[in-house]
Image (cartoon, rainbow, N blue to C red; front, top):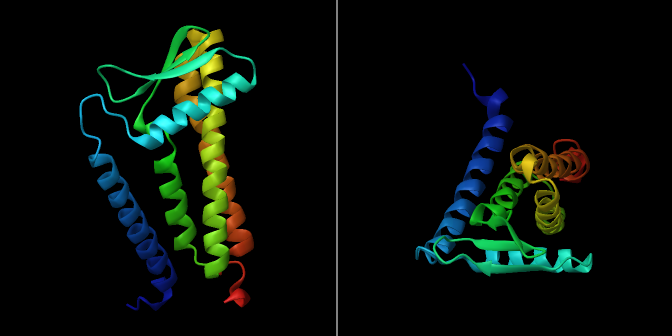
Length: 181
């Protein structure tokens, strides 16, 4: 039995898991610096503050403040506490998954770096808009919290990430464009 016909697939898996494990490990190391019971990492704080900024652009009285007993930020919408922004809400895990996939489907170094930066920015900005929109939806339709938070809004960010992957594979990777090597 020869593995040569499986070589591209195995190379893809190896690159994917290597990049994913390295980036996830670095991110966990970063998070380990914020282990206090109610300490929030700076990226999550920035996401909360930027979400407030987006809400304020639309004339909403919004604020974020650290939770006193949990490692999260409280999002206040028109004086009402509508959501907790935890580390998992900052889109870094999605960006890590995105990056691992892009690197696994090789492309030219310049294209890869450009696409990683542009795609990560799209995901990050979309996440800010997602949180702001979710806060508004939770304020106006609190009875739909489970569907909004658990289904609709994750669907949006993962769908955009998937579309970015499709663009990468079809336009920039060596899989569809072997002549670009």
